Amino acid sequence: MGRPLNKKYFGNRNRGVDGNLGAANSGGDAGLGGEGIASIGSITAGSFTAAQAAAATLTFPTPALSGEGAITATGTANFKYLSGGTLTGSATIAYSSANVTATVAGGTITLTPTLTSATTGVGVTAVTNTAGVITVASGTYVVGQDLVITTTVGGTTLPSGTYYVAVGGTSVTSITVASTYANAVAGTPVPTTFSTTGSVTATVVKGGTYNTIASVALSNGGAFPAASITSATGAIALVQSGTSGTGQTFTITSAAWGLTSATITNAGDGYISTQTLTVTIGNNQGAAASAVLVVSSASAGAPGTAGDRDKAILITANVGGTARSNSDIIKQKNGRTYKVENTDGAGYVKLVAASPASAGQATINATDSGGGTYYVTKLTNHKATLTQNTGTTFATGASVKWTFSGSPAADQVTIDNG
Image 1 (tube, one colour):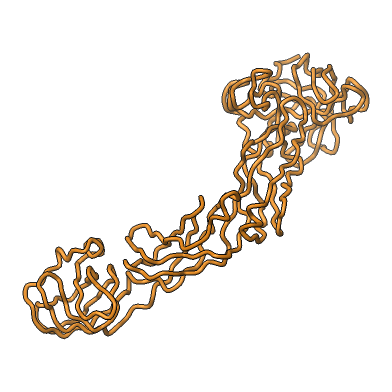
Image 2: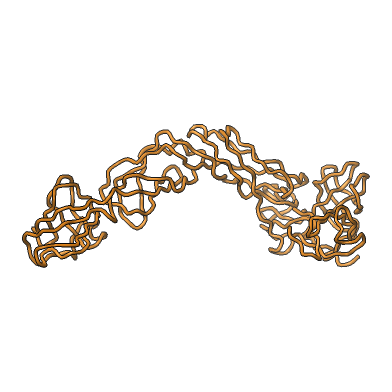
């Protein structure tokens, strides 16, 4: 009959995630073609209060293949922050313009800060201590703020350059400066020391690079588990990579949330790419989503390797008087005859070039590179014998190379699989 089909193309060879088949399989996910659910996609976020998000549920569609091993996927919703939070608190150490994050209740919100505008024309009148203490115009000076001096009169007492506030305060006229942001945050002026003290005349631009945050804009709303979203409240510290900025917070009291992803608790089994994969969202608030299939691993291990989700040939078989598209091949008798199983039981069927109207008949479909379809009347490991349906590229009776790829070459057909 030509070289027989590799058994990895039969769904009943797929082991469960525990590596077992049959009664030894603890998860009930063995012995079936098709795939599981990896995630959700094509998402419309909707708009939820925290209480509404906590009550939202996801119901996944029933797998198209309903033989032994079919399992409906399960999962829980994750939500992203949309709006409603406010910038609060006062900086005690200055921030840069890099993104800041607010982490709470198992999720992280990323925000883009706008710094307070730099203050120009700040006067410096004296170096009062060689260990970095200078006399400045009265004002608020935050640790880490940069002070850029471009012109100074008073010899080398206060060289031009960029300094950073090491010791500041509110309505102060005396501050300590350091030569780096890190040294300023550490509270030490080293290595900023001045050779002499005395009066100077200088002006400073304060806070051009490191400053307090004036406002924030949403960059990424994160992914918060529905079960913990009601805890995402209160003043949340803003954290910034690369700086020690602290003191300012992001406060959430009554925020809007949107569906963003799912945590898949059971991937299920028996799903195929041609079925409708709409996810039903309980308490949906305008949200919508569809399921995204796990990528099958037909080229992974040997047939039946634990963890593989080998694609299987999709066959419509009539075992008990009704054509069932959810049939699994158990074994191949020859190129035209197969033992199959579906909800009507198990039995032998023969491939026909039509819908299988009578018991003992079956149909396998193929598609050419132009989208034309064919009935497969014989199938071996490398070739499919075709009968034209809508396709005309290959003549009836032609023996053609076949693939599971959705983009067959001009001399190939794709066998329906899942």
